Amino acid sequence: MRWAALIVLMTLAAPAHAETVHEMFERGNERYWKGEYREAVDVYYEIMRLGVEDTDLWYNAATAYAHMDEYGRAAFFYEKVLRTRPRDAAAQHNLSFVRSTVARDLSKTRADVDVNPRETVWEGILSWFTPNELALIFLLFYYAFFIALLVRHFMTRPVGRVTASLFLSIFLVLWVASGAMLFGKYRTHFLSHDGVVLETGIVMVHEGPNPQSPRVFDVIEAQRVEIVEIQGEWIQIRDDQERDGWLTTDQLGQL
Image (tube, rainbow, N blue to C red; front, side, top):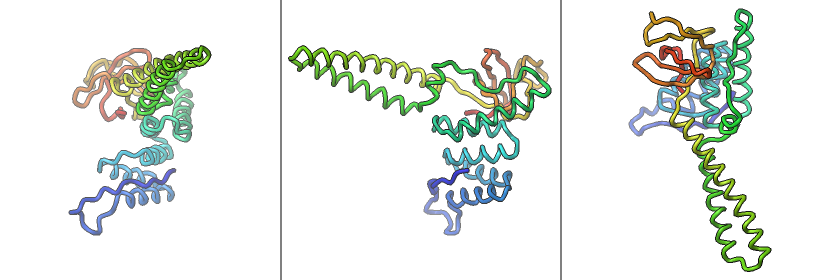
């Protein structure tokens, strides 16, 4: 549970008695501490509908949902937190716990339950950084490379030139590596879109955007999938086995 100093979104025309966003957030947290998790979530959603995007708000909503055993929605909001704060240890731990709980509960009736995303080593490395952080790292090594190049140009002693050349090579490698990471993060963060399965238990995925369309495979509550296309109230998804199918918008939270 977290407390945040949220931005107060008030207009000059608002009544003097209007509740500020910070006061609403505190009211939701009070509901949470009383064990009134549904009421707390309702307050958090009131704040979100005002256009507030805040990691502490998402974290508290996720934790409240976890207490209500609504693990799909809990995972959805923990994922939102980690997109902005990728090294948040509490969100990482809670997300892992939520997905492990889903897998444990469903494994009693089904053997092939796997909720955790399958990530390559490269994807795992990228997940530890935000796009802005990688952009700063890229710029840092970019300038370091050209500074080392400039220093080497003015070096007259052989030892100094060799040392400068060594640093030049290191900064070049790091510049290229950080550029590759930035490009990879850009592709995963901006060019592709993910979602989290919200519906409880095992969810049937349809062949087409129609409730009468046949089942093609199943997804699991709290599972992360790729969003391929959106058609009205239907979303085409792709799982980590490269299988495509359709869910409704109320079955999937869009990250």
